[in-house]
Length: 371
Image 1 (cartoon, helix red, strand yellow):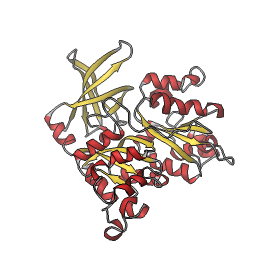
Image 2 (tube, rainbow, N blue to C red):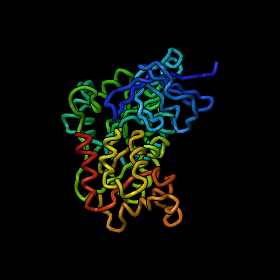
Image 3 (cartoon, rainbow, N blue to C red):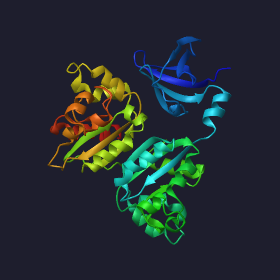
Image 4 (cartoon, one colour):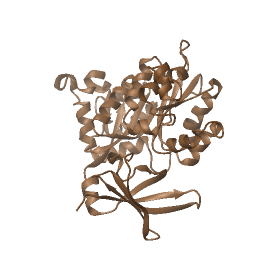
């Protein structure tokens, strides 16, 4: 029989304000999809080729976009899919420690090259007490105080990584604790030192990963550590869902930091259509691409950045380039949209158009959505 993956999905219908359940079938042979309405017990979408759905995004807990419908994958639809797709899938915490955020783009490129997906990300600054809580299990060890002090000495980036054997893959990238002696090419050696000043942290097991991810990204009542947004002298940048899905986040961050801009806050968001419409409301009836812009921003996870607007020699908006990537490639070939954009909608990044709107756009993500 032809190989087929099956998933149980939910879709919120804004017209009827109802949650609808579908079976989603994916055929790897020709990248085609099919949907079945579980309530009406009838075919909802006949089998059709859909190249924009990436197989690596098909795992329980993720959200995918199929013909402008945001489907939450809540379960595997059969035993074969659970065994084939879900058996090796793991989540782990990747923590980039103080001083290493400048290398975040480079680290993200390695993560994507390792077939891991960043499903959550947040830049935060831990207090001494929060860092002590994170390291609570090591309280009796001699390096405890130094580790807590280092972890609370500056901003960190916490990420949830998903992928086959994610715990061991990330730990292998970091290298052993005594990295300078045992693994001179490891990430810890390249970016940090032995002892408590390692450049990164990875969960030791699935149980540890679940606990550590809950610390930064609570799934129940309460909030994790706050973001680092300053809301002062800043502009907003959003790495769009298509660029995130294509693994371009690391390259874009590298380009931003190499150009001398400082990222003062960073967080991954999954916007619903209502939030995307609200954020882009100023463009409604003004630009013809408005519907496409809304569809794109709500099609999957995006990465919101607060960029400190302290570079007086160049503006971040100029660095992003014209909205049309083709025009960017002609006029400003080294801009973000020229390098990573596809068309007027999938143009890699959104950036604040007017200086006076910078704080408002940053607040929308880091104060309202993260509130």
